Length: 335
Image (cartoon, rainbow, N blue to C red; front, side, top):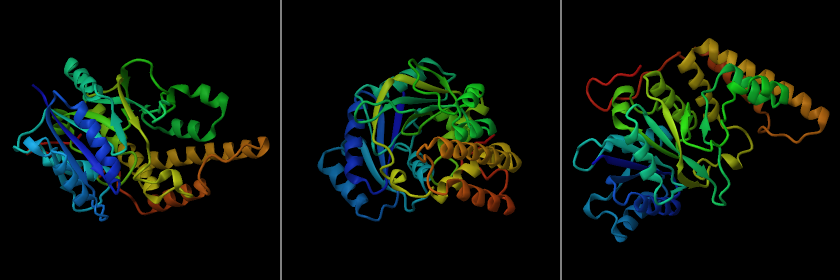
């Protein structure tokens, strides 16, 4: 029977993490494995509360669930890497790793659906869920990999251009059926352990955003595609830990992650071209917005912040590739 290691990352959302853990344990009923809650150095009493509640609710009996402390807040990838490296309590390696956000609540059969999809096709590396809001509204979580043309199309928001570049648009909408995609959101993501053994874990240079995009791309380059599983349903609130919805300016970590993604996957020259395309598309949108009186969509001073950040990154000579994450086992390589 395949075993699944579920990693649930917490950062200052203890109450919601407990709700997510309860939903996950229900969905894991009948599936071999364990759930690991990783507190990402919240420093607000989360670790202590999660530990107390887990024991009081009987979740820790029989190694069903453990609560761990990461020791540092290195971001989404680093926190999940800590849980993955912790492995199963007996020291053995699971066949699959399942990542669940602290503000995501899987349906009773959601995890089983992902597991069945990966078991049915040994050539698939990762599988992600259909994500919807608490009100049932579908979320767009299936995507193409970003490119220079996708940066232009997404920023311009111009109908004729979008139709011309439709095959380069990053969002795929909400697929009506299970299908292969380039990448899926990491809110509910199951990964074949053998793939992680081959390509490595999350690149911890990313603090937030683009880390699952890069990991799925690394898997795809190694011949392991990603599957969007429409039958796996997960409710997701979104941006609870990051606070992105309440920010006035685009945060520096998003700009860092975007630049690092393009520079690592395509080189700094391509990253600069992607930024120029984004700026050109943004300028077209600003002109159209002023002519037609449309409300602003981007955060205040977004284009200026993007230009300054990426010019500085280009001048600093950010390397085209970074050292891969520490391997899971001796002999692991990263393409």
